[in-house]
Each structure stands twice: as C-alpha cells, then as structure tokens.
Amino acid sequence: MRHRRVADLMTPNAVTVQRGTQFREIARLLDEYDITAVAVVDDDGRPVGVVSEADLLRRQLSKAGAATAGAIMTSPAVVARPEWSVVEAARTMEERRVKRLPVVDDADRLIGVISRSDLVQLFLRRDRAIQEEILEEVLTRTLGVAPSAVTVDVTDGTVTLTGALERKSLVPIAVRLCESVDGVIEVIDRLTFDRDDAARDGRAPDGTTVRPAPEPG
Image 1: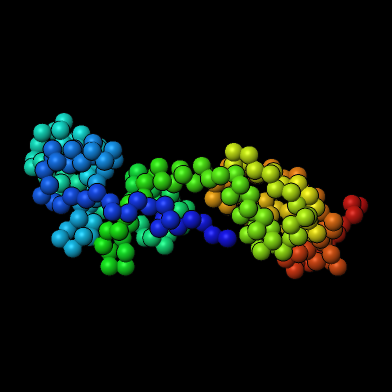
Image 2: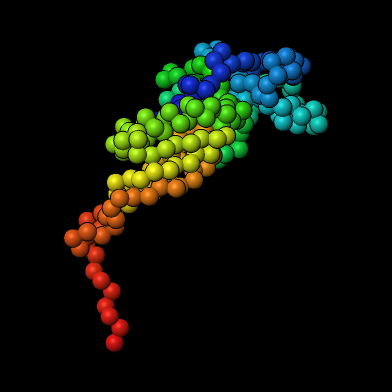
C-alpha cells in the first residue's frame, strides 16, 4: 500500500518560458493553455523561477521595471521530485503557499508540473478502486485479515467497516490505515473483535506491565 506519487499525477511537458520572455507572451500562454503559472527555465531546462497570474498583476499595477519573465518571476522556484508522495507535494504547497510545483529529475531538469487541481483528482477516485485497495492492501496483505471477516462499503469516499477482527488492538490500526488510503474522506468504524488483548498476562500489547489500581483506603 502506498500513496500515489507525484509522477502518477503530474502533467508532463509543462509550458515554460525563459528569462527574456516578454509580459504579453507570458499572458498569452496562460490564456492559451488555461493555466495559472509557468515555470521559467534556463538554457539547460532547469527551473529558476515561476511567473504566476499574481506576478503579472503586480507588474501591471506597478508599471515599474522590465516586463520580462526574469524581472517579474518569483525565485527561486519551489520544486517537487517525481518520487515524492502526493502528501509531500500537498504539504510543500501549503507551507510555501504556492498552487503548483515544477517537477524536476535527478539533474534538476524540468519534467512536468503538479498543481492543486491534480491533487484534487485523488478525491475523485472511484469508490470501487478505494474498496479494492482497502480489501487487498490494507486488510488482506497488511493486516492478514480474511476477506470474509470484514465488509467494506464505500460511498463517495466514505468508508464503512463492518465485521469482526481477531483482536481489539487491530481495530484502531485498521481504521488509521484505511484513513491513509488516497481518496478516503471519512471512515465509519462498525468493527467488533473476538478477543480483548488490551491487557494479557499482566502486560499490554506494547509489552509494558499493567498493574491494577490500588484499592482506596
């Protein structure tokens, strides 16, 4: 079980400009390709910055300085790697307050771009795909639960788990793993268990000693 990678969702062959590209040409590219930003690359195809709609607007309002990509771009470019999980990409966008990330290879050359809209696609995964991943990857392969032990229903990204697990300690683990599956919005836990292993032979599941509370008085 793994999160989708940036390479799975990115748009290859990203639209790019160079430092000397003029304001009007950048605006034309944004309109033609219906995008909100373009990467600025050097002669070797390495991103050196990004020009967004906001950058164009600031330049238009100020009327100051040269109207080239190199003059108005936000630099340095915040980039992603193709092997990153989408969680890493989303966290970087949030922390750096950007809406898209140029994706670079090991030589730092641009190979694609990933945007917030690409990440949103995860939440549009088919319910059937989510159900299959939970049954096969979470329950069967990771937890070793028999497919007949738990029923997994998925509706619009909401997962309902019904059935019985062997041990009580497996219930929160199963819920957490299901919550981590791409496309899952919520997990409704209706699981029961056959055996309460919260404390056995004087020890909790993590091996720590469990001692009864002293009697009052």
